[in-house]
Length: 428
Image 1 (cartoon, helix red, strand yellow):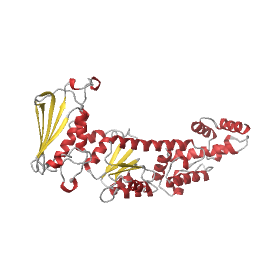
Image 2 (cartoon, helix red, strand yellow):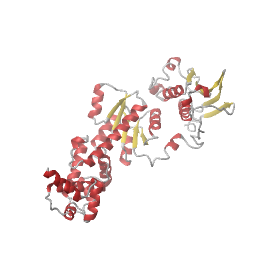
Image 3 (tube, helix red, strand yellow):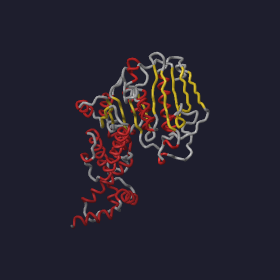
Image 4 (cartoon, helix red, strand yellow):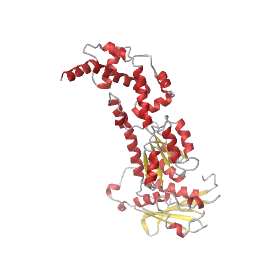
């Protein structure tokens, strides 16, 4: 942004080295937000001056100043500047300091036992002044960590580049859709330590990502250009390929009829702005855990009961069709993923994604699971003299020994032991 708008940044620090106690992560976020605002609402070719030093007459405090020569802020608007989700005339006048960036900054400063103030006049620039305690005596002993703090931000890497490095270990991918750049960036910062996070600025861009990425959950604003959140929700929930993806709607609307409309569209959760970060994180975590529980419960069921698993109507019908398809071909050992996908009327990739999300199993594992459950039902129905080899062949296994191994791995007992349990139940 600085290069694009020809902005000049400068830093003065007096003295050059200041030793003290501070929370490196919180201070990083504070400075990042202040610099972002100073750059975004500055004029072309403008200046941003950062100054750090001891606070006058307060040796236990440092004074951090971020000053720009941009549009400035009227006295009237300064009253609401740090209010969470204050937007004022932001979209109309492009005024500095709206959204949640400054509210978050104020919260972090106060969490650090500091204070933040603003000095500004219309068309004469803006200066944010942060006072932070750095002496050991300013903090409780349990807040002090004597361990050396490593550099959080190596000089040539941005926070996004660092956070996104280790995405391979992140189990879920969350798509965040929001047209407000500040809010989009902050939500990404909130979530990317736990999830792989993708972003889009409207529903249309989100659909492109959903088409090309494996998305586990969508968080979307309602009010957006091109395609709004309601339209995106309706699109996702009406498509077989995507209907399993949990979707959370974020909106300033909080009337009962708005909630009703959201749930009619198929939304899995509805969060009103302003919201706490912990609420969003908890809702995402709970929706993803619910998916895991459904998958776990499906695996335990010998007879599929969709009403016990909280699937959508479209997904109930899909899983039932998948089970019926495999059951019809249970004795055909050559029945494979390609034939399965063809008979289900989907691509192999769509079939895999749907089954993985709804049952926690890959296509191959799902086929084997249904075959083994079919074997259990046959054991329940057949007489005592059933042969295990005959049972194996009847559910598509060419090797009875391998069938017995798979059966024990799935149900904890061998087929012969399972049969003994069935006989004992019938006798009692």
